[in-house]
Length: 350
Image (cartoon, rainbow, N blue to C red; front, side):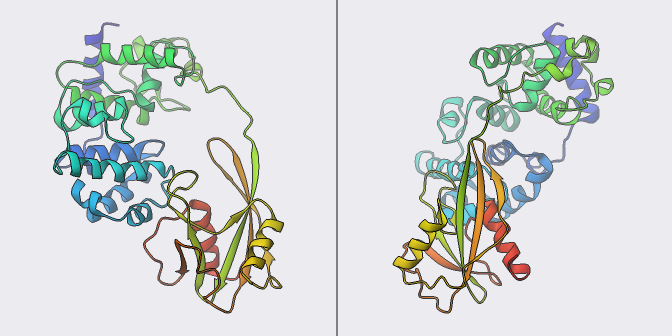
């Protein structure tokens, strides 16, 4: 199919069916588009919308975000996962404030230099917010192109990604790039979905190789399977009335900067930690274990709950606090921690 025909069909479909009233599409700015693009990485639109709205209410400008404490940013991010995105968002906002006087940059090189911003995100900001001619290649666009042109292989492989970038460059029109890039993302999200694509509703159906051969499930190629290693983590839940002891994780690494329960590789290690701090372990109770899966390993979490009579225990731990269940502080929490706090908030440990 000619590139001009491809883009014309996609644009015609967008004008009729595309999404035009998402929160970041109203009074569009580079800051709004950047924030939405970062949030949308690995996350569905319906999940992102309330987070985006809360962020914009609290941080209406990039300077507001730059001046906010990281703890508050992580707190508002709690539940979205992939917390490196939030840390990079904060770093990037500070970079914009420091290097660009609080004005969001408007060149590809400057935007791509921001922490957490890659080629596709930079292209999305420039095209969607400013109408500049840059292609994009997010997960939705990869899927549409891979199926339409039968590009084999996992897009995580450099040669496959390069092929898809070339196709994206070829089909992105010189005019109407803002509408086209949004249309490609919408097409992948609404029609050319991962499973059960709605091929009969697709403007590219008659020229799509995967549709012609009913082979959509082959494209894009799946990531090579690997067995994820398994680890065990013992979480210590110290509770005094309505307050729970939490310690802040180091700024980098797993759950960097978030508040978590003290974590140990074994129950013996946990008990040794308590003994060193003269915490009586007589009433230590094991709660139901559960599994939390990261992209690179499974973590089997064993919660160990202990009521304590004093708030003095463990408060020499540096960045630590007693988390009030009735009046939660504005701090970022790892998802399993939030799950256990909710369990403690709603009743007795089980």
